[in-house]
Length: 267
Image (tube, rainbow, N blue to C red; front, side, top):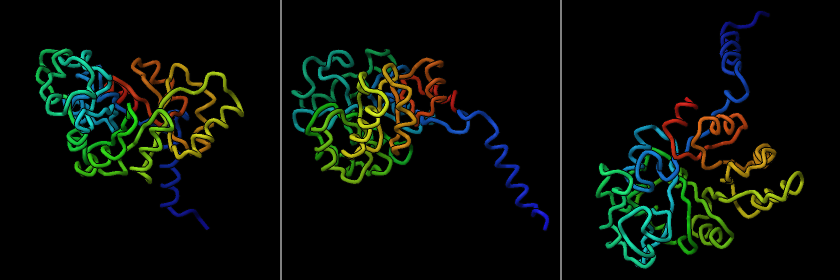
């Protein structure tokens, strides 16, 4: 019996699809770090808008909490570096924080850009991109859940990143079924089976992904993580040669301040 024409066509299409290098058969997700910190003031709605215009499939933002327990999008514990405020963010209420200028330090065209709340950031991103949360302090679980629900953002488009077990316990109580990401560095003293056991421990604690520093990443960790069904993201990659190396290695996502350059590489 001859091979049906439709089968021949399907075989040809599959051969064409998989005829490149291994690296080209699978594309890493580009994650706009702090919304794309090289292109706009970090952790602002302006940065998120720019990432959305570029078509970034995921954006990463940092979370802290104001004195009146509103979850804010901000990286540092203190206000001076990326706003015209002074002192600790945690000691100011959300209304005062909203009046600060978080854009002019980057460029005059961003003057007047406020520090956003998590709810406002998620409302902007809803239905347009995934969001990775980098939770900077413990105790934000309930307030973060409330902000997500208020924004209407889809839970299955959220990645929840934490740095330690205290944060994880709090966020898992608030998000028991969602995607949790370990953020940090692989222990430099571990390799081989010991490194695999470390990954097993993360998986057992409920993480489904790791977000690790590219500079200290053991290259053997990537296939080990994927064999354990752990997605692997690496940060912060801004140079084309770094991005190409990470993509070739087979990571699931590259976290970058330059989503424009990274997207040009993966498209």
